[in-house]
Image 1 (cartoon, one colour):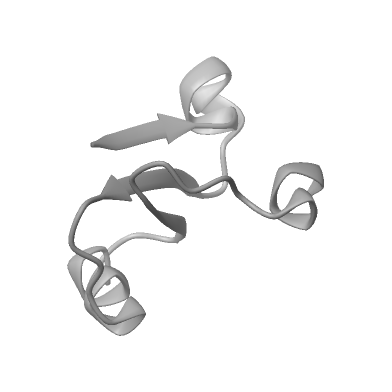
Image 2: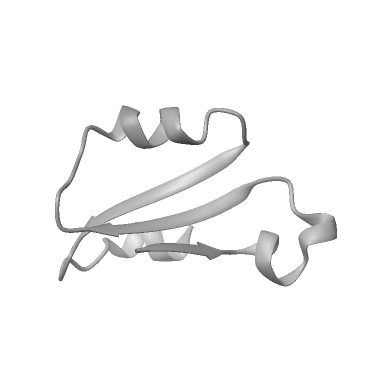
Length: 60
């Protein structure tokens, strides 16, 4: 699953980047996810299925 969130969703005209949450059953090297969005200014959070993100990720 890939979920777009943040200002790119609710205020796209003011967004400076693209925030993505990737939930996967098969984790890859983080650099692979970065390569996939290399043409965009993107922040990516990758979680395994059933994993809970650390609180620091939720607070920003």
